[in-house]
Length: 73
Image 1: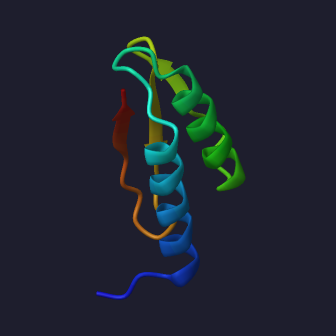
Image 2 (image 1 turned 90 degrees about the vertical axis):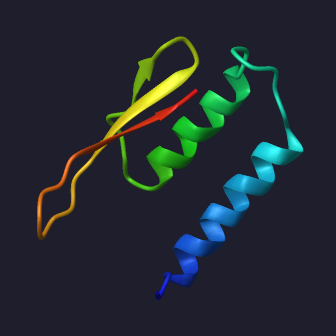
């Protein structure tokens, strides 16, 4: 399986940030802000709040529309 190096680097950056700045369960306001910012940088502007500190994002592929929910809490 091939993973685009830019995407891989971004995922590693996100993981390192989340582990460097841990937050208590159900109090992840910094995590939510960070992830919203990273989604906007990636061109995903329609993230919406879900279940307190969670986020809900619809992801669609251009060639074959596929919608899946991603809930982070």
